[in-house]
Length: 258
Image (tube, rainbow, N blue to C red; front, side, top):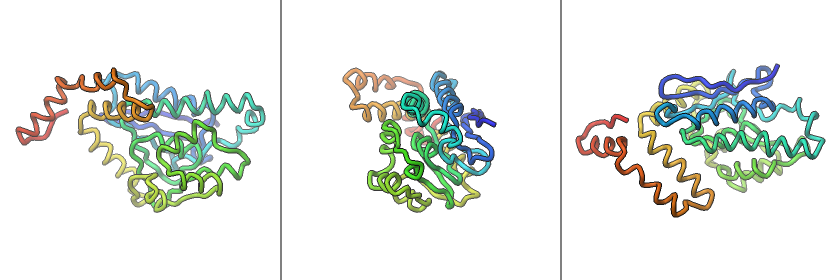
C-alpha cells in the first residue's frame, strides 16, 4: 500500500501528516509528489486564507525513516531515471517547503532519517523526543546524497556533523542533535505533540505578516540578495494594519490583536 501526505486544518494552525504504515513512514515516490502539491497549495493561499503555522509530523509515533527502499530497484540503477528522481521529484518537493511563507514546525517523533531529515530541515522550528534519532546512513546502501539535498541539509547541519552522518553513516541521538543545532528543543517522547502544538499556537498569535516577510527576506539573503528592488519592497508594510496595531498596542499597554 502506498503512503500518503495529508493536510489537516484546525483554526489558525494546519498539520501536514506523513504516513506509510508498516514502513516507519518511509517516503515513497508518490508521497514526494503529494508533499510538493500540499505546499504549493499552501503557498498559493492569500495571507488572509493561509494558516498562521503549519506542523509537519509523521503518523504512528514516527517522523519518517527515509526513502522507501522497496522502490529503489525500479529507478536507482538507471542514470537518467535516478537523476530525474532526485532533481525533478525530490528537490521540487523540498523547495516547495522552503518557498512556503507560512512558518513550519517539525514535530519529530522517533526516526528522522534520510528523506525524513531533509523534510525536517525545511522546517523553521524543530522539536523532537528524547528517543529520536537523526542521520542519513546511505553509505550503507552504496550511494551518496544528491547535490540539491546535500545543499539543503548544509543550511541546518554543520559540516563536521554532516561529514559524520554521510562518511560514517553515523546516527545522532536527540542530545547530539540539540548540541549541533539540528533541533531547537528536546522533550519527553510523550510530550512532543503537545509541545509542538504549544509553540505553534504561540507563534500563530504573533503577526503573520511579520513572519511571512521575515521568511522571504531570509530566502533572499540565502540567494545572495536582497536586490535593490527587494530592499525597497521590504518596507511596503509601513502603513499596514498589523504594523499599526502592533505598535499601537504596545503604546497602549495591551495585547496586540493580529
